[in-house]
Image (cartoon, rainbow, N blue to C red; front, top):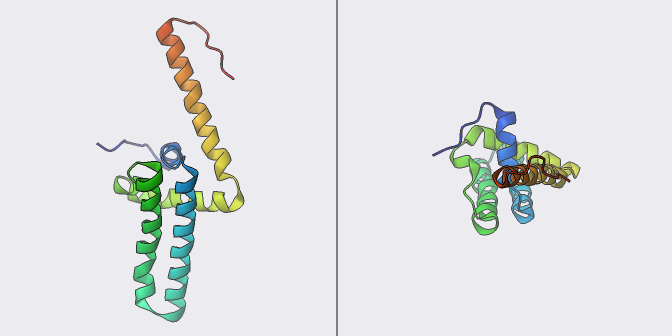
Length: 130
């Protein structure tokens, strides 16, 4: 069953966690860049086959990243619009050099939550959070 999200900003942390593997992110970047190039070339040359090739190439790289490296299903299957928007955000953050920090931020949050849950199960009142 698909996870439910209120809005895109609620979806973004899920998307980032689903792209925590660096090779997966690199493959997404290559695929998205290639797809944008094919779209531009298709428009400029009026060659329909380039336009049709764009999603095949873009998603092809992304799916290799998910199935081969991340070992999960692409978010596109359940949330296609938000996933596309998140792909573009991730692409721009990779280009700007800020995506790795974004991934680390959410992974650190997950660790804090896991430690707090463990402390609650153990009966520790105030877990140490670094």
